[in-house]
Image (tube, rainbow, N blue to C red; front, top):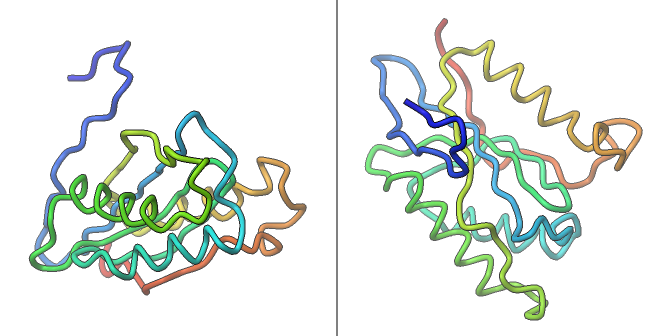
Length: 157
């Protein structure tokens, strides 16, 4: 049961269901919501950290100035999501090109395991349109910091 005044998310373990993928929607924010992420150098550092951080595959993502939305899926022997995110956030911080911007990340993150393909599609539409809602571009396809690392597909109902 959640408290109405809860300020930190509860990270539930991902639940595997027979013959269904496990896809988790994650939001990670910068410390004090500093607008430091939406640039080519940050994009490269984040993508490199995701590729180095074994255990989870990142699918679609959108990197905004002060937060990241992405979808991820665990491998067979994946660490818990919190441990994996702690690892790649640490990698990004270690390789961050501008030391005076530390700390980079808020301590925690938000996650939600998706339950249906419809949920996955609707969350992606939300993520894809996020730069438009924030007034960063007129059309979502104009935002250069969205993409896909791995192909995560919902198979089944």
